[in-house]
Image 1 (tube, rainbow, N blue to C red):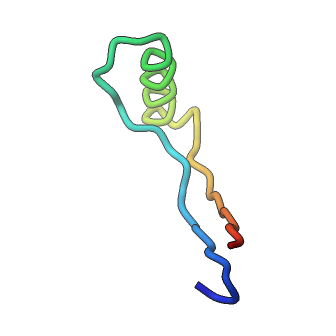
Image 2: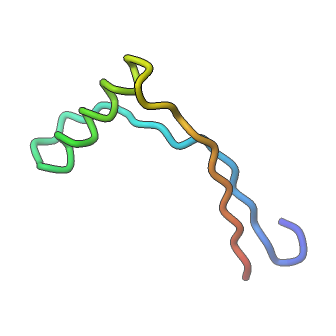
Length: 50
């Protein structure tokens, strides 16, 4: 933490879920696309200020 700020850096990607909901179906579809190379992960950076 610097000057009351936090910077979070990560990659946005999908992880398979065993839930039985509409959103889980969409997430699992995105995971399959990601595994097939049709959907790529992307970096994210979140700046939080206190």
